[in-house]
Length: 138
Image (cartoon, rainbow, N blue to C red; front, top):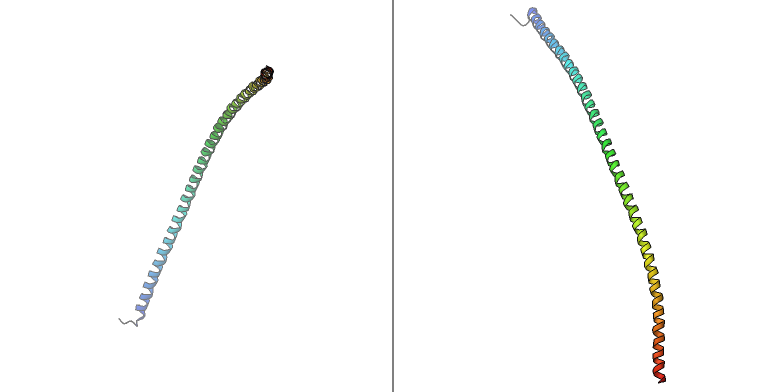
């Protein structure tokens, strides 16, 4: 057979059309499979996103409640310390008041001693004057 025969060209055309048709069917079905798989992946990712979101929400709630509990505990302890400190400060103020009273008593004693020293100084001066005058006149 010669290549110029129309039957050969018809067979070549039919064979080419069959191959192109087969390629079209394969590519179309592959495209559909890929679309279906991508859709499935989107659904799975959406489900995982929801699960992760709910887990994060749960953790957020747990952490929030723990922080709230710690805040109340710390607040209570600070309140207790504040009460203790105020009590101690009140006691110290009382002790300082007592010390002020004692210091005032010491001031009064020193004033009394000062007066006595003034009288003693006057008496010693008088004795000294008598002795010196007495020695001069003799």
